[in-house]
Length: 231
Image (cartoon, rainbow, N blue to C red; front, side):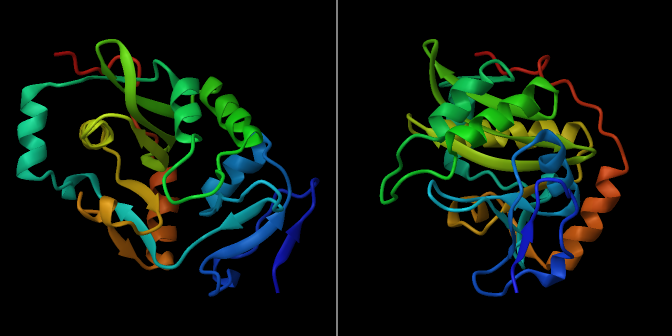
């Protein structure tokens, strides 16, 4: 039976109580306060819902993840990176990135990055928890992604691309930064062929939870605003 969260209680149900169908649906209700969002990610779940739906919390099994040392960059993408078609920055335009990520997508109706979600993650960015990667071409934002950095784990949320290979190059740049900073895992949440092409793979939820709790207890050293790739 699906658990419903009150606005006063921040605790989430045990991850193993999540539904099998739909895969990983753990709870509904609550709110998007900073305290609840941080509690959710520490617990191993995340919000994902559409306009008109109640707030839904998910913890899929298996979990799609990328270990930074397992990043795979195709030969063609490596060639593009060497050509330096873009400038890549970090934390320079978070609000613009999440706004583009919330834009319309082909073959989809609506967006799960609702206005309340955007405001909530902007608050997390202001607190230094949520971060963005920006990909620029001739001073125009043509790609990017955003997520949360907690301990030595990065929770990827969404990406967008308005130019060929823009989001791919931004993603590869992010993973290289995470590797240099000693991050243990990039959480990709759900399986996609796009992420699998970079070396991301599915692991059991129990394994993800064990890595999560260990990585959260080891603060990471990072320099989000000081790292940029400039042609």
